[in-house]
Length: 515
Ligand SMILES: [Zn+2]
Image (tube, rainbow, N blue to C red; front, top):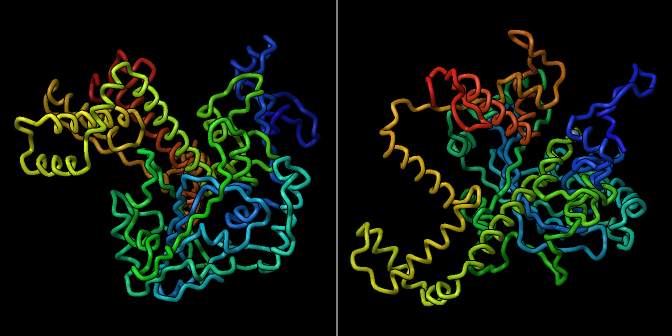
């Protein structure tokens, strides 16, 4: 089984001339072993038939077996009165702690609306018909995809399809009932709110949307960045780093109305996240159209960890995984949960855990609050009581656990403390260096995005217009992070002569001598 993009063909004859293979795979194959990343290692996930390539996020949700994410979209309408059809913003994916499973398909519009929420800021009224493909549903498209899945995807073979539900969907238009998920604000100034939210070293790529738009006057442009709520502390606190208006949207509108705005449905059939090869195929039928190629398949000839497979999906030639709205966020969240579960497992397994646990149960929330207040006012604890000592120990236990989880608050504090320790040893640094590579203006990023027309051997390569570059940035967050990784590695390797393998300076030293 070979991937087409790894095979070289002679002209357009369709005859294969050779295949690209790395030395590791080659040596394994000569030993008659299946390489980890080979398609034959149960990694074949198939490609989506051409006619379904333009399925939208909402259409996929209508057809998905499982549902684990809720989406909050923040949209800003351009404040330029000549461009009322230019929108920008982001869609934030929230992972829920329960996975629900559909018992009959398609899902109804009410079901899907339960997972959507829109915050709209702009001078005009929110008009769902102007949202382009953002919330688009097409009755015929959905039905033919479901029928296709029923015949080709084993996970869908036993799910009853109910055509009568289809009458709830329009022929082609925004999902019915969308207006009820929208919170609007026409008073706030788009420029002020957006400026405050995106303040940074360089201007936000949205500013580039105006470039090249003159010839597209009146044309619809929607730039929506994909962001996700990561939850390193694994406590599914949805509100923590929420922007104010999105919070408002998730909370009940007033105290008398106890119906929250975003109702998260779940039923009595929870779906396991561990050792469940159907998990991702059930969530994303457009990425795994045949229900194959899931994670943690026990029968795999060569073992493949969750993390390795996650990396594999983000580096295959099929870019659908990059472009997907929530795939990477769900992936990252699962990796973090697992790290947290592992650390918990280690902590609980320690020989002194039982005695520590007994002491910890004596710590009351009231005591913790008193202690926090005391520490805040006095900065240090003089003659702590026994209970206070226990409370501090609890804090220590929690911190040692979460310091190992990338992205958590404790891990950031841990790194900060390490840097402070360096000050103590080496003295204060003389040079502070800020590095801020901008993918929006870089020809290298265009190539990483997959643009083969940009010639990097030229001194000033021809680049697409700013509007196109901004849209590319929003479309492919994976290429953006790849670009950042590539840039900082280049900088450290070539300018500072840092050797990433041995983790020390090379013998010749860089522009700052030895680091
Ligand atoms: Zn290989």
